[in-house]
Structures are given as structure tokens and as C-alpha cells.
Image (tube, rainbow, N blue to C red; front, side):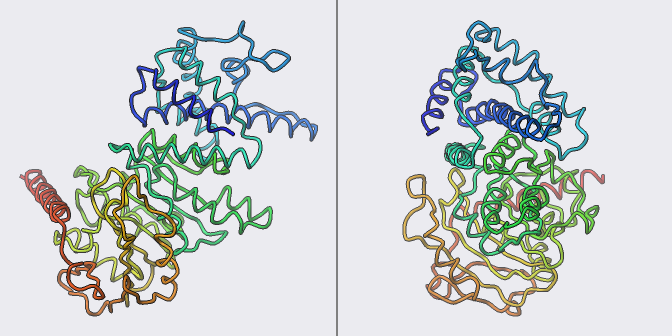
Length: 483
């Protein structure tokens, strides 16, 4: 029903000089879409208040409501062109009045968990990239056709929005940071098996794919009003550093039916892990933290095991944020299993000593579009040392890529075998007691398919060289700082 609307929006964005990438497209669609959602939400709340005979105080004041600046209507619900801003007038209003008004919500909000705070956060971080008021008018008119009233409408909109996020990820550059293939996410959730009442966390939330899929997994299990309220307000939590990803995450969760997302806009790695208390911890952690980044020495100071590798810092954060008895599924570069640098070895030692690393899923190359590195998923529980590790090496029997993406059927055998940790041509178990206590090497070597699985690719070797170079640079920088 709404697919043509999104195609028309794309056509308008292609004409816009201020928008040149898929990231720009989704950013600009998101802020307009968010304001239309807010207007529909206001109308719904006003209607409920009227039925109950009580007053309603709107979130957005009369001067800045959607029906005033975006789509003023006549009595017959057609657009009132005499009151409609367009061209330069529309751009001036959005830049000089609308955005400053919305940005100020952050200062007036009663708390960071309110929709008012999120309005201020969103519009304090992004900017209007439209330079042509005529193009913006076209986009606004298309979005005015969308409705958020029924679950069916929200479901269709969420599917369309997800397709845009996927397209952004496939476009490469930074877009790939925000998109984890949904079949992989669903398999990870199936393994950790969250329950109503358990709190779920992603500290590198990206487009909120893990939280949206966790919500979809739990929603059929919420059978009472109390269950639904728990799922809506006290179950899904996340943090995101980048402004665009934060906006996308909020909008994606709203479209999936989560009314007031508990997403905080902050730099997770800026928090000292020694400050994390029991009340801050979570039952379930699901994440695909960014890898390949290089963090500054002042960020590394927040961690027990210091390294410039972003993903390794995130892994330490997640290990500390997990409750005793909690379960985690974390995507990480497969070189983590065998790198010989000090940080990798120390992290593996910590993981095996204080967590039950019960499964490792080895993903094929090409799983992540725009990212050349291979990955694994670590599944672990907190509170007991590792006794045995079950490995599964995913082999879909084809080259992965944009035209052959990962699907649910590819992971069906993994999901079926995992509970009993059964052996197959693609799976096997090792006794933790046999792991070398010097290197703690956990390389994925499939004993069922000979030694060829142990051969490292040139990319894997290059990744380790980069990691070792980064560690050497960190050590030299520390030495200079002491001199």
C-alpha cells in the first residue's frame, strides 16, 4: 500500500543537491517521518482523552503542529494551498524556527526516558539537508499520505523502513555499520531465548535490529496487559554514539511497535567499566559492535585490558554489563579467536575463566555487505568457567554477496543442532581443558573436513598485522607519555 509512496520519496530525494548518499536519504526521510508519526500519536491521544472526558496537553504546540506547517487542510481534508509553505519559505521555517523549537525539548524534558527528551535529542543532532523547498514539499506531501493507526499499517511501514536500512548497508561506506543481516539476528535470539521480564541490551545499537527482532520474538509471548507493559517499557535498552544511527534506531523501533524506545544517545566506550554496578547489568546482551576502529588512549583508560581495537573494548563492556547467569551473543571478527597480541590473549583467558563460552558460530565471508572481514558469533553465559565449546562452521554452499544474501534456511541446521550441541559435518565440540594455556587459541578448525579449514586467508593475516601494528603504536604512545 505504501511502497509507491517510498518510491516517490526517493525520486524527490534524487533531485536534491543536499542529499547524495543512501545515508542522506534515510536521514532526511526519518526526520520527516518522525514528525508525521508524532502528529498521528497526538491525534490518537487527543481522541482517547476526549472519550474519557479529560483534558489533553499536546506535546507539540499549536504553531508547530504537522497540520499547520506541513499539511494544512481544508474542511474536505484536501491540502489548503493558500496556507501551505513551499520553496524558500519552507526551508527558512524549518531551519530557523522548527528545528530550534524541537531541539529545545531536551532542556525542558523531565527525564531521558520521555518522548520529549528524544525529540530534543534527535533534532539537536541532525540537520535539514534539503536546499530546495520544492523538493522538501514533495517529500512532506508523500509522507502525509502515511498512517500509523493500525498494526497492519505499522507492520508495512516497518518492512519498508527495514528495506531502506538494508539498502543503506549494502551501499557500503559507513552504511554497513548499521545493518546486521536479520536472519543472523533471529538465529542469535533463538539461541539466547529471552523471556518476558528479562532485560535486553545492545550498547552498539546501530539501526536497533537486535532490539526490534527481540521485540518481535517476545511479542507473541506477552499475553497479559502487565506483560505488554513490561515488554514496552522495561525490556529493551540500547546506546548509540552516532547521531544518524540514533535517529534511525528510534524510528525503526517506533515502526516496529515500541512506543517510547529506551535508547540513549551516548558513547558507550566513554564509560569506565569499573563504575558498572549490579543495578546496571542485563539478563541478555545482543550486539554487533563496530570493528576495525582505533580508540584513543583516554578511551582505553576505561578498560582493564587496554587496546585500540574498538570491538575488543566493546566485548569487555558487554562482559561487565551481563548479569550473573545472563546470556550473550556477540558478533566479532574471527581473528579474535587466534590473534596473538596481548589484548586478544588476555580477553580469551578472561572469557574462558569467568564465562561459559558454550558456542561459537563461524560465519562465511560475504555475510556482511561492504565489510571484507570474516566474523564469528560468541555465545556465552556469565558465572561459571568454560568446560566445553561447541563450534558450528556455517557453509551455505554458495558465495555470499548482495545477490546471494544470508537467509533463515542457511541457519536452520545451526538452530536445530544447537540445543543439544550435536555433531555433524559442520559442527564439533572441544574440551576446554585441551586449550593451550599460553595462547588460548580458539581457531576454528573443522576436524570433519581436514586441515584446509585451518588455512588463514590473506585478509585474516592482514587483519592481525593491523591489530599488532595498532598495539605497538599504543605501547609507543604510552611510553612517550611517561617520558
